[in-house]
Image (cartoon, rainbow, N blue to C red; front, side):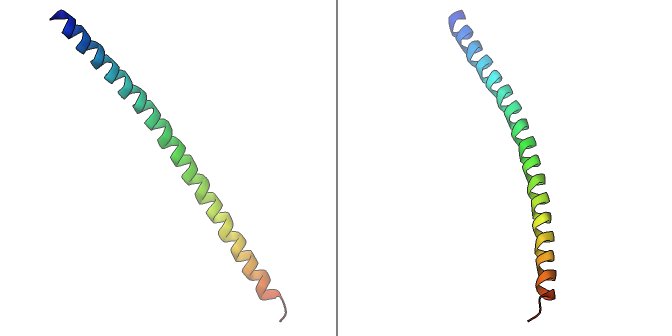
Length: 63
């Protein structure tokens, strides 16, 4: 009986360890996602600025 409890205890410890590892990885991935979203927002703003500049230049070109 003790053998079964020891085996169960080891399995539970592995599950807890995996949960901890996944929690750490999840946090890292969330931080990475936030950084990428911020980078994407900055790029979108730059693209919008470039589009606006191109429209200004196009309006200044004589027909």
